[in-house]
Image (spheres, rainbow, N blue to C red):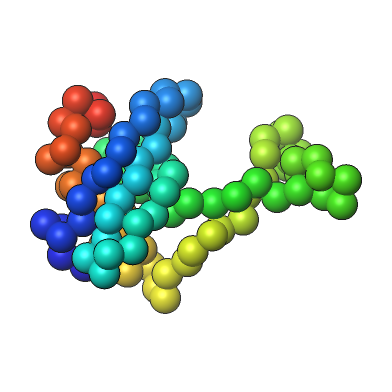
Length: 103
């Protein structure tokens, strides 16, 4: 995945814990991914693909033992290296488009 080929269409800051916000990105194929999560940690920022809240039969959000919402992936990657390259590419594109977004 070419870093220069991904472009950030929108950036929405939503700081909360490790979460910095969400971005929409256009991939080299022309596909647009919405709501890519941008998180921060001790080793820097990373991008996580969109996910949706898991719900029960009554339409209530499922939570884990700590009371945090559970999510299921909308897209996934063939392997860990592909996921890492996706994340790095999105972070580099976000740094170019919105340098203020990342610590």
